[in-house]
Image (cartoon, rainbow, N blue to C red; front, top):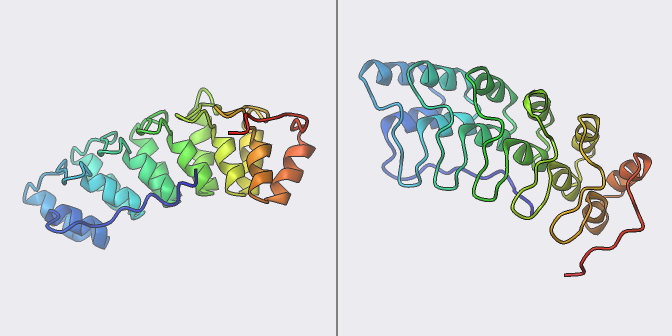
Length: 211
């Protein structure tokens, strides 16, 4: 369940544009754009220069790419968008840039996880603060039936848990194993998160499927 940071590694023989994004060099990106380098190039894993810029937290480069025609909602072979990537690396400035260019806050990857799921798992609180007002529902479930609150509690992120509850997260939502957020927080030994959930009304007399 732990999502980690969805590490994006530079592959061999990447395009010059992708290399410039990884290096965080806006001037090189401008030079390549002037030379008509393909702004929507995709590598063997269908990752674009914008994926690289978003993951590396290069907001200026992301803005340059989008203004030059980069597709803001392009997906890689895991169906991750640049917004997913920016949330995984906790780059709130890049998240703000992508949202300004109409990035899809409801985009889902192959695990049906939205950018908010990724932000919650990685304790990207500022990113979540940008996402939440644009969402119609903060209780969207992934393929395992887990909401962003489940992911925040599993990983012991108290501040994120508090934010999600303030934004309307359902405290007793259960996943496909009938596990609530409090189940996961307790199972992982996150006592401060358990205390917060209890304070906010988490149901304690509930059983999971014991799978």
